[in-house]
Image (tube, rainbow, N blue to C red; front, side, top):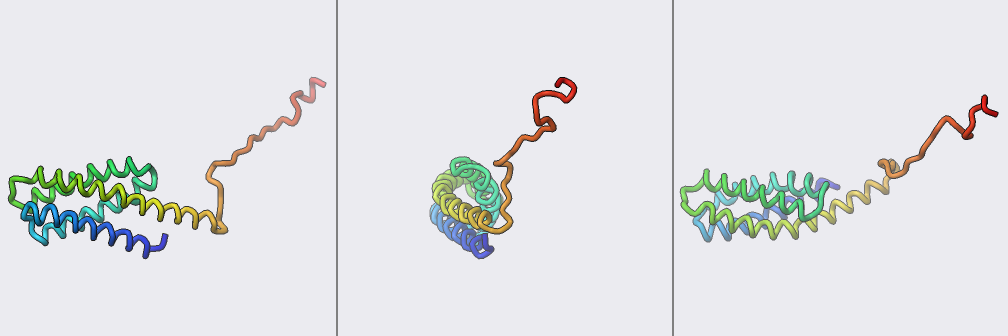
Length: 150
């Protein structure tokens, strides 16, 4: 996949992550703009690498979404706890995690389409080599009898 596609996907992930977190954490729980921005940036970078590029490339959307759920909860909880002085950290994290997990489920579909296009581009190149799908069996014997038994 072209680097431009990665940048585009990451930008969309960051924009939507920031918008969702700003609506929930910023407006609902009085977390500052800078803290929401920092949480969104860290979450987007880790989420894109771990959830979208590594996990989704090897598993299905549901598994990648569950991985993202755990990742989102951990990052949002610990960063909100460290950056703010509020009592509602768990509640803010729960709302944020649910909203972002729903977004991630649909975002993974977009990433999966790009992964499929990337795989198709790799297979159409001249360096196509099967990866173990085709196998043959070879042996030294051509006939079932030894030369001595004839």
